[in-house]
Picture 1 (tube, rainbow, N blue to C red):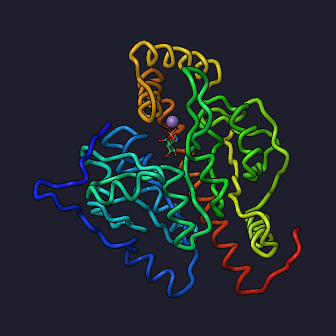
Picture 2: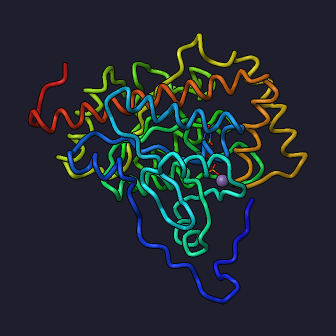
Length: 326
Ligand code: PSU
Ligand code: MN
């Protein structure tokens, strides 16, 4: 948790410029190359240090290996940066404190001149405003299970943000059924990638079905083009990409550690935006790193698929619209 006064000692506020773009993203936009947005909350708060920096770099490399340009989004000294460079990425992976920024925090944090990591909500809003149409993450926020009312701003933000979000479902610490109901109410499209089961983040199957299934990046690109052509649905398309069963955390271990972790956090009085980082850290410790291995695989696999979708999307734009699904 970080508390910031937006006034420095002279009583003046910081006035950082508007959103800035990394050189690699500027170059990609000039040549209409496919771009994939990446978030930084998983880097600063979701993964343990020092592995977090290696993973953040590896995710960017996977995007490149699949033919797209990574645009990792975060806030450096109050400046929103679309496409941080390696020095800035290192800063977000190692500095303390780094604020956790949802959409509502962006202007306040900028005026405070802080370093910040953007959540799914923060990242998708910035990416869509920058014209980026594909975003890879680990798992979405959603409706929490107990302890009063806690629903991630990821959901309501995705309702109004036209972007494809590749994820492994929602964090397994959430009430998955309630989260799926909220996604339906909010008008967020949910599509299974080569699966009829909604994935459960660390586990391949959350126990809930999905209504729609796609089998290739080209099909997802066709959905996104059609959505834009229709001009009717202006919300997000969630592409749910499960871990293969042989890479998941064993479901019995998962359920046991989850129950223990929730009880431990409740006993320690952890609430609000601190819940996710605390529970993920508990998981990684209690599974002797099994959940960390799964978490990293989730992010890398989603980055690869997101890049393939972005490539298919720009290939379709070159060859013309309206090609048939195969
Ligand atoms: N899922 C993970 N690790 C994470 C997150 C999700 O496995 O670190 C982050 C994402 O950035 C997501 C955020 O947007 O947690 C949701 O936090 P909250 O529930 O406080 O909205
Ligand atoms: Mn919350």
